[in-house]
Image (cartoon, rainbow, N blue to C red; front, side, top):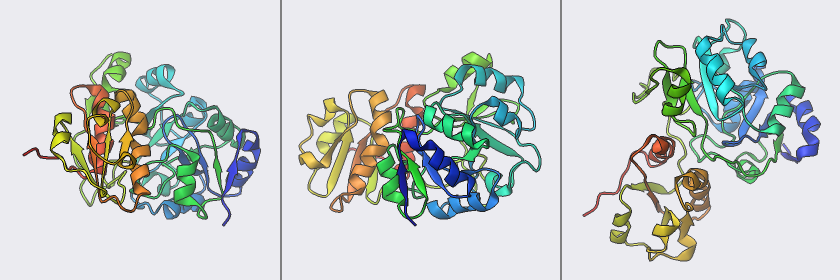
Length: 334
């Protein structure tokens, strides 16, 4: 299969492919998503096949606005309306009860809930609005690999497996959206993102909890990113919690390092084995997946040491992705 790259002026061509049941990757402010019509079970199953994604990992339903979402949600409670008014379009995914029979089980994983997202990207908004139907939108990458933040990342993973990619440039945020579960008595963040629990709590006027539990092997996760390993390059990843510990590591041709510029300047490693996470945490969020992909293309790299951060809700999303990429492995100083 030929994978076509579409520019801003070729949205209609991408719409035609989706309407015909094909798969098309699309840009968002967080990462690139892999689109298929959400009500077309055959196309949705094609998403799982293209990504190599476990079939019990539910998909996010991407909509152009709240009106489209209301056709598939059993109800849109006041909580959801508050969040939609404040954060949509934007990097927030809202999990609600699904209207029975409105979406195939390939989307919901057989659950009675589904997650909805309205991205802040004009190309994707135009795409869905012209299509007139919601699309599923998991990250447009090979399952378990770092999420794609450019069209080139998508092409690298899915060339020949999908019909098209809409090139919207580099994603602004670089980490997937925050997912909040509103199907329970107390709102719970299932996956941290740019929008923090504190910000959500301020809008809702009630405490927002943070999910810390592990999904069992037998259970179906309520949202993406809760059960399976994610974001992992071929090389082993190690989290360095204290930047001072970089001085204890013996860097050579087989080791890579990802850190803020202020720390990279102190590290004696080959230039090509260094990747800048920028000046601050916001930059690091944006650069994390790009750095993991940078080293994934270097066959000599066997281990990657990555700077960790702690101390506030702002670090939750970064550390969530990094810990998954590292499978929980942290550097132990001698």
